[in-house]
Image (tube, rainbow, N blue to C red; front, top):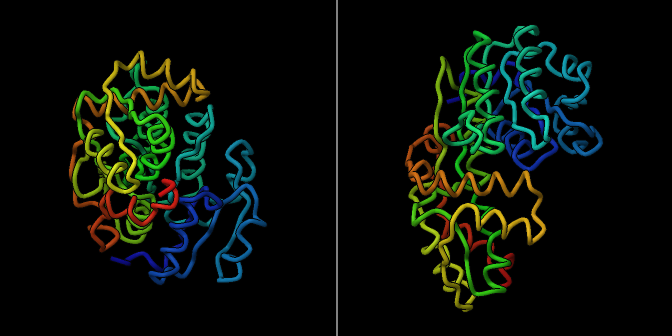
Length: 292
């Protein structure tokens, strides 16, 4: 599972949560030539001290992108959160090809599509298209919803006693950020060919079950309340959630309602050599974040 440990491996967004975890996993698994790309190289001084080549990489600065990809064999492009991320990421793909990169790993999203109802998920679709059109080998990792998002949902749910969603009872296969980072690192170390893969937890969890977990872990009663996508979006924006993010969250709920988030795969175990953590285990380990 470490066939390419001596290849030159680049991780973009290495100053972020997923990127840093991926770099740490590469180190743990014996990778010898790691490049960590970040907008602020000072943030990764500890990784530089461990032998990681830390390079400035700002997706809005073409020169820095070109310099970061120089000499790279295989690259993990961690999706950005910018409003112009389609432009950022497709440019990065073009730079990777020009630099002679042989394999791209990209952190995408389930059911990536260009439809107007997809919200920010459309950005993933167009990035996937650019990667496929590049002619390079690739591993597109469609990460399902992060378990961390359940913690985000907990605060308003525990405060009001109600968990609102537009999933129509559909399950979500929550996956921890650590599991996705380990999976991405494993793909960088071993994946070959061209694959599109869903990265999931061990089993789908409904919002009713999530509400029950909140109650179990905190002792505070929480009831799941089903609403329409329109009502959910309005409620999120009224609560101060930015329009872009509200649209994305509604799209995720509607995809869950359509069954796209109930997929179960062995991708985490395949590339990380570990079984994915369950949502209950993750929330139990993070009870303090729930106020429990």
